Length: 192
Image (cartoon, rainbow, N blue to C red; front, side, top):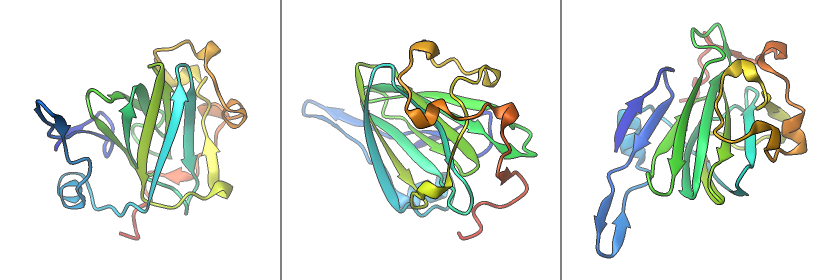
């Protein structure tokens, strides 16, 4: 696998080595050893999958400490625009984001560390999105930033005013009205 650093430290794009032949393709979608050599030490404990149709936007989600999660994400069918927003108080990249297109064709993966809000927009007719988490889901710790927050400067590649959002996602605050539970100077990985 090849790892590409982004403009925000810790957020990386991963491209697997894909072997194609007349039968189709094969690639190793995850190797604990290689991930830890090239990205960071991690212990994934939960895998999730969602299916969505064009125009669905999910996010921008996070879990509050001590339930916060890192995620390793990929799109196994269709195409999504995946976003990570730095919400760590005191971070030199606070409020900045990284965007990457994940698709069944490019096989890319996106690693979003703890201390970031995450969301995606479905760009294809349907999309199946999978992600690994390094902490179990805790509904009592749910949090979010508004997808409609224009101050984030995100080009979602679909009309946000026509996006399909959950009731929960419609109610999230904009970044300027949000009191982040994350501190850039606190190690969110102390258990590793």
